[in-house]
Image (tube, rainbow, N blue to C red; front, side, top):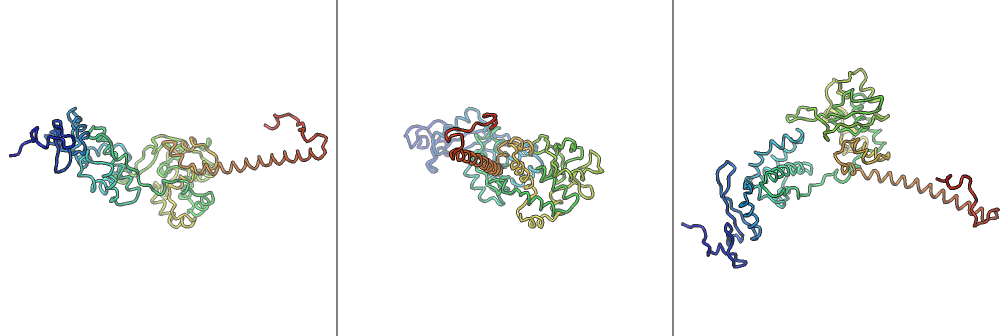
Length: 409
């Protein structure tokens, strides 16, 4: 019966240096790898022997040192086993709609390709290879990568693995990733959109989206008492989104912070019509029967496909109305921090995605300044010409100006 290799066995000698290998490490000639074998607790509480291969002796030594130092050996747990244990923590930490997207990403993409692998065997190249076969577009793949990253983050915090390889993966780009400004409507397109939207509750709702930049769930959750008509302010403190089973759940806004948005003159008539005859606790924007509005029933009621074709934007989404408001704010000269606060962005970096709109403002401001400077230069040239043609002040003498230099400031 074969036993463990002795000290003089070829398996105990490093073929690259000819020196004996440390205890716990042997050379596998058939695999051309260094192998460590340790015993630790299994997932069910029993004992299990782990065996791992490494290309270099240094890697094998580092791993063995971690185990000897008492490192949690549960890196041998498979991704599926870890998902069963940790999913509840993920689900409770995100919004229901996000949890549903994560669940779909796990079931349709991550689980079929990576569930059988041990946590400490998963690498970034392995994830990249799996992503090639994941079905769906960039958004679906990003959801799958997000849930995988959360799983591995939890494993890292539990000291099952050293680092999270999913964080090294470049996320697939989406059509919107370049600049949301390219998806924004022009002022003329906004007018066309509202003109072609059926009058009444739906036009008022669409006007609120484009003239406040609120997310659809935030506009749906607005109550009459949230609008301060005297100050011209709308308070955004809640949002409606689908729950775990598709039901509408009222919760805090996406940023988890309340904010105020302006009630601009263009929106005021729509808001006043929506509030007329209602109590402060009633929904500001409700359906014809008093029910809650959703993107789905609004798109159906206004015939969204035909509507966006009519204004020349076949790719228009409801969320692009939020991009439109942000772009209009920048176009009007609003500062980035003000736009961030109004839209409820989590960081200024998100707001900076609208920087192309500010480029247009800068170009227009530059044109005005150029025109002013060129006009002033023309006046100075005319003054010099008159002086050099026999005026009582010589060509090298400047005409004294009333009020001195202060008059030009």
